[in-house]
Image (cartoon, rainbow, N blue to C red; front, side):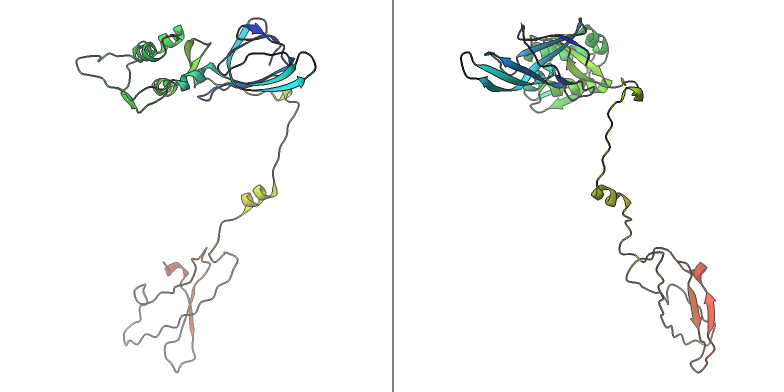
Length: 284
């Protein structure tokens, strides 16, 4: 990240340790981060406390406290502490608002032109009146007819996402009080390899072995030679015709591939003359 100018916790500036980690997630998963405040006095921190990060002078990131760990570092005199704070997106607050079972239906005579914006406005008025809707979200949803849906005790986050996903978007909060959206069709630029200064690639022997393993078990392989002899005794004064109805060879395993099938025939029991016939193309 670029240079951080200031971090405030509940409106009060804090001395932070450089190396703060922030994950900007461009999908329905929420942003997260870790903030370290070293060697500080007693600070009042609670989950959902507001954190504002200012960087590059004018750019702002809004986060809230998810969890924190407080470790004492100085016992003598005024006690000092290290604070390790897990930050999450303000959108997480929408997951803590649980609605009763809800359904949206379009009636023939009433509400036939109900839009997604109007439905979002209704839900915010009933369950989160302190939130507002951004102008970008209003423009996106004001003219789109609301689909029919139903939920059984959903969160407000779930309801808003289900409505916006029909437009290829997900809900997000641009600050602590404003509802906005994230367009899932947006893509970043290709990574410039000139900026890569650390690259690591790993593979283990188990992964390699499983990748090269040939799954050809319980079959006769193409490299094996299998000889099977099945005597056939047919008594007939007319021409002999061997078909799949009166003769077949059953093997214990399936055949991977057939190279050649030869039939060895002797017409009389007293004759020693054996006729060899290639019947590979006649086998089914």
